[in-house]
Image 1 (cartoon, chains in turn cyan, orange):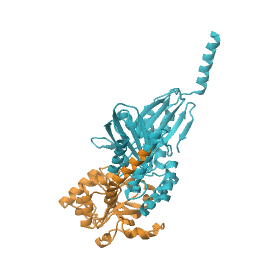
Image 2: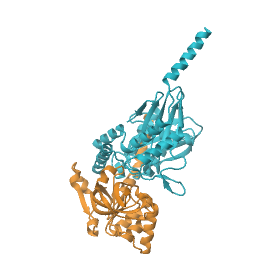
Image 3: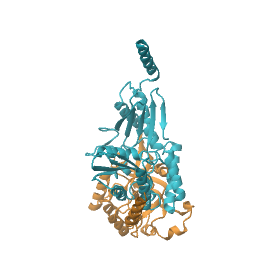
Image 4: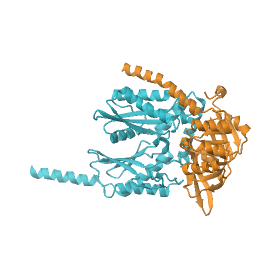
Length: 310
Length: 219
């Protein structure tokens, strides 16, 4: 029996070796560059669908024309391989790494190299966006750039990379505040206040991500993840799904409209996420403009790269 | 709110786009109203640099000439990539940026340097709206994320000054053909779509909050 058990373990190990090759730095580098380029040159399919529907329903003539131009602009960028927007943002990547994944080289450096490769090769070339926060010096690289976050997925034999370039248009208006035992009403009011303050300034209609609870850093991370959620997925908890519905309706009733020049569609989605915490409750609001830059890929243990939400 | 023009607008909006050739006289600009769609042809000067705006406003206040005369022309918050090779400058693409961050300098620029058209996206504040009315200038809203459409208007670089700045911060004058369409969002009669939309949103808030409270009570 003992021998049999030992053989089983050896067999399992051999199987593991056969099917799981380590993920190499070159793959990470090229996937990082690819995700960024795709985020700049194509809007997500679901976003295009939401805009096309919004255009049909829009009752404001200027907004209807503006949304029509948005779809045309996005389609043209995709056809020509050009940039939808000249503010290419700063690179942010979120890595979710399966615990059964192995790496054969550097991970953080590979992402940095991937962005540098993109900067060197992309056509048309991109403008300098990476800015020193205090001297305002501009570059294509900088301290902590790309901004990378890491999470683990227990037992998974793959890793996901999400790329979400962050530009000034919405980055300027994101906000967080910490409350004490807020009611749902107060939480909802805060989100609306953030949107009202941004007003016509971001490129509407936007996607709104809200993170409630945990700690301040966790709430902002949840808000970002909620913002990146594919379209049409309500929160599984009815209490949160209710907030999402009410907030979306409320924001659209404000009447800011496409590009903030009046209209029925100011937000395409409001996605809320929450976490347990203490009695102090941070609430963070993350925003994405109408081009809704978000791309993601899954790198499998056998080296296959699969694009997620095209 | 955006005037009576909407009553006769139909889906064939392209027919309603006015073609404007720069430079423009005051009379032509004062005839424009919020909500109208326009395209620009001729020379437009662009920059999205805060130092650029500071320097322009300073020149305007001191009565110093700019290296390029924008009187009667257009000064727009459009970021532009200019490819430079073998001494040849070619504009590759352009796209609007949020104008509100230049609020502090726009009144001095408009009053002192005399553009008839300013623009970008997201609007300007009340002080700028008053200055546009006083001086006879309008603000145009360009489509953010509209680079592929807007860049088709690029014909060449007319001049490029203050080249010590990064590409999009320079004082750049471009030759364009039918740049747009853009929406007149602040006109020279003191009407601002942004002001009316913002005020309307604030005025709607009590009703919106009440409706949300009712919806919560149903759960």
